[in-house]
Image (cartoon, rainbow, N blue to C red):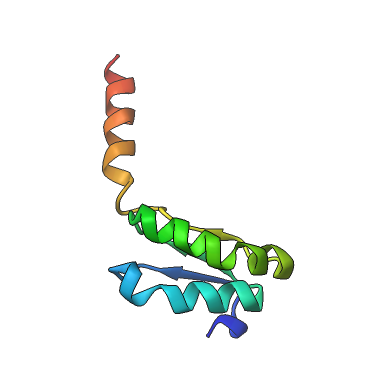
Length: 83
């Protein structure tokens, strides 16, 4: 799957159980990766394991996009509009 596309977007969770292999494959194949996790300890572990491979192969690995941060972002936006 990772070799047949430019970017993979994952919403599976918990990522600590279901996401690690996909991050590794994307880093090794040079495929961009985006997910919706909020599992910060897991994200740090993925950086430790795969950052060098991702940089070497040109993969952009981006976590914490979406689900866990949207409520906070919307709250800040609402406050900003009210003020």
